[in-house]
Image (cartoon, rainbow, N blue to C red; front, side, top):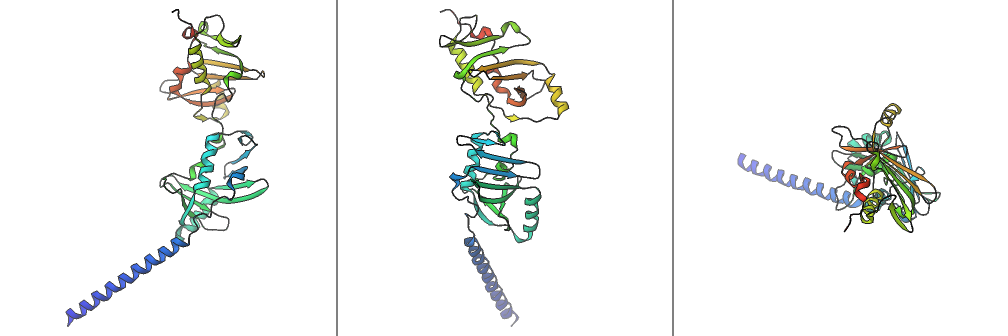
Length: 310
């Protein structure tokens, strides 16, 4: 008799478990299918000409002037802007955040997140908040008055929040010289520790060469290409005391360019210190960090360019 009861209990339990599993799966499927994956898509994205990124510490305004994007009035890194627009185009809502963490996520978005506002002319096309967890690579978007949603870019595992958390300096154009070198009037390169190897180059009879020597134009063209492909890894902001200290450091190479409009541009590379893994320099008066591997390509003294007799 007891054995029969045990069998009945086991069967009943199995039926209950099956019903619970079925109900759970049905509910999940229903909830999943009810999520509008495109709720954060920006309508008419190609018409967006201003994007404001506001956080507790900084407000970054990206604007399109008809030919290029600017960040707070300065030229923006066009490749980074392209990444931003690709993100806005492809991002999809995966699911609402779990109920028990919604309040904390909403607070995080308000206090530590970024408010993203997209405009087409005077019209605000879309606004949402963003917060991310760099450890789990999870990113949450939230519409005004809504709940946070976990978002993804289908087919990719990327930390979506990172592009919305960039600082103004990280948005800026990293090219050291942002114009075609064919438009320069002259170039001066000075080596403080070896002034005899300093040189000046300019156009003469349509040929760009170094004054005072028979110039190997192939080598000079290679040097100029390397110089005008220079990109800073970072644009740095230092406290005034640290900045003043860096200004006093010795320079290893100083490059000055005058363009055909009479504008002057300069790059001063600081003498690397022991165990320094990057190259610091001043682009005009602005401190930048460069990859140390580029140094041999632009540290070229006058003797390097002398044309060899054949």
